Amino acid sequence: MNLEKLVRPNILAMKAYSSARDEFEVNNEVVLLDANENPFASDWNRYPDPYQRKLKKAIAELKDINVENIFLGNGSDEAIDLIFRIFCEPGKDNIIVTDPTYGMYEVSAAIQNIEVKKVPLTKAFELESDKVLSAVNENTKLIFLCNPNNPTANLLDEKQIKYVVDNFEGIVILDEAYIDFTDMESSIQWLNDYPNLIVLQTFSKAWGMAGMRLGMAFSNLGIIQFFNKVKAPYNLSILTQNKALELIKNNKEKVKSNLQVLVQERAKLIEALNKFSMVEHIYPTSTNFILVRFTNHSRVFKTLVEAGLIVRDRSKALNCGNCLRITVGTPNENELLIDVLSKI
Ligand SMILES: *Cc1c(COP(=O)(O)O)cnc(C)c1O
Image (tube, rainbow, N blue to C red):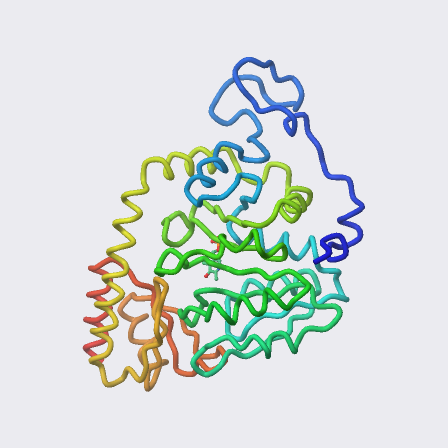
């Protein structure tokens, strides 16, 4: 892989914004008269650390990875957007996504005027690496793979993923938003072997911090440096950095036990759903949601809404006819769901 050839020429050539804080870690021994801040002390009168060094150190320990291989963003959505801005020339380049998959890849592509090539998964939502690779042309910069996949909930085959990463000269983004709900090891471990790989994870799902907006991208130093070059200088607020640090330190056990509850609840929900004749198929899940094909999904959807239960209608996605995507809730919420369904 030739990173400089993949990056857009203007991004390669541009000079990044620099502030005095790029060079100095703020501590109590220096007087800061460099950034036109208000000097009266509060918890937020200063600009935050642009590189989130303390938070990255905690995440590096958590994920067993080096700090230099981490980018932190305002949700994974920021990382996805930056990947487009680093690599994709508007009106010229294209990307490949599987169909169906997470909608943000296509939205970010549309914002940048980037063509999206959709390669169907099989009817059982399996990845076919040869089909993905045969869609590549000389302007294909990115391939997005979501593992486990949203909205289908299944894990993709590791060999098929590796075949894509091995045989594509552009960048492969492996979105692991739901990896904590599986028994699989993260592909973060593959980073040493694959210079063209970016792994995305998030604090929004298993960690229960969707409202905080904190996403992670893991990659090799060269790619991380481009993230840092194009990101907004102070992309994560002091509030986010401090709170996330606190939660990582103090909440690990709570997160783990909640995760166990969700996995148990998922199994209970599947068992209960299986008993309904209106349930045609429950797709295998390695996530905190279940894709269910009903005999008449719109009737089920309507009944649930009337009872104040909101699920996601995914019936228009490829090979998802009559499917609803149901997020696993608390034990009480799941009981309510089954209760409402049993009255249909
Ligand atoms: C929920 C989700 C995310 C998380 O996005 P954030 O911006 O980090 O909240 C990323 N990818 C997929 C596939 C998701 O379903």
